Length: 613
Image (cartoon, rainbow, N blue to C red):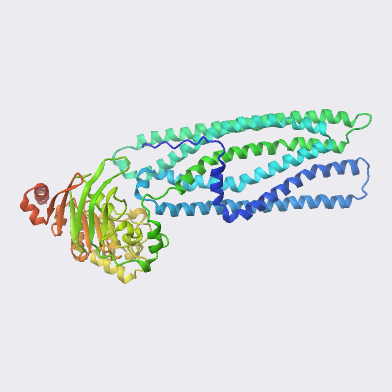
């Protein structure tokens, strides 16, 4: 398994990126403002605790009196209750912001993935998309929802604590605060190393997600190629890299806090030394309560500093996740309806079907050329006229351009040169959804969704009745095998349809395409991976259901296209032969040789089959 390297994100703090991300938190702006106010108020309450302790010592303990102590207890209790209320409130609100923002980004991201063109999926690994929609999105929500708390509380507490210490004793306050720059430098140094390690962890995590996806989707191929040992070695290497970088990050984290605590202890020792000297001086320049408050501030002020540095590091760490998510969300589909078309016919997600014209099925290629991104031209000045209701078969070698032609007709891709007309109008002047709503497409490898057989047929037209579903099943001769199941049409097909055979899946997908009553029907080698009996059923369905529809059949087995109105031989993106089956046989060209060879092979196989009986 080979994995594409992810882009490295080593930019410094990017305010413009966070501005974009905060747009997705727009519904929660009031919540974020409220959280910030709560955290500043919480920091204020935290600063009051040492002052209340100072008052308790200097007023009540030192003077051995309880006069007014009841009012002091009430004030202290109110401060503690206010702290509890703040903590509960910001936990509730921040959790709401985190979950809500994560949900919103995933919702928007999923819609964007529905809009993106085939070309995007051609070059983007599934594992990376899963990582972006799960762990990366979760990290963004976590950083904005909870990182803001640490930042506002830490900044508020440091500023208010510093101001209070300088007010109580500016010389002792400056001595304590002098340690802050040293701690900030140490914290930044270690956070930079931690950040580097976690970047590697995140990159490796995307590769591991991709490995899981490939391993699950390609399980049968792995077994047939006996790739278990090689796959396991590659996966072990990935997990080893993740383990190594995770340990490195954990080690740096474990070193940071003891160093910070040691520096903090030095500050506390200095406070006790100098403050104690002032307390026991002749004029008692400092009270015991004030010294106690200083010790409390000196003990507590370093944690929020580390918290601030860690939050900025986390934001930079999350910035990489944010850049990946924003890149995906801002990726524009290569095939997109113009503003004029969207205004008249609506968008893919909000169509205005009332303006949709009827699709008759006349199709014309006008000097169409096409090349995939960075590749050679697949089609060169290709021209073709197809009348409504005509059945066109495409024959040729692999890579000759057959699938490209039908993908262009379906507007999964667009011509790089020339144009395609549907009913005499350039199809770019019509909605994509208008065209694709009139398509029936049956792939070589059918894909079924999790659910019942009935559900899968109904996906072709969601308002289809049970009677209509059963009718199309009979048309494609699928009802025979469906009724053999205990639950019939309500049989669960399993993930990807794995509880059905390939032939059974193909018949269900054929019924699904047919129930939409499409004006244009495409069969992309739909019979190449099924048995002879199923092929005969599909052939029968083709003959009975394609009448009156413009149809394109890409065929590997030429026996399925003998009744086509026209057969086109495609070589190197050009039509080299065209005509009916009978006409092409008479020409004795490429098609004749291909048909003769295939007929001979099928006859030999039939004779061998009889000989073994």
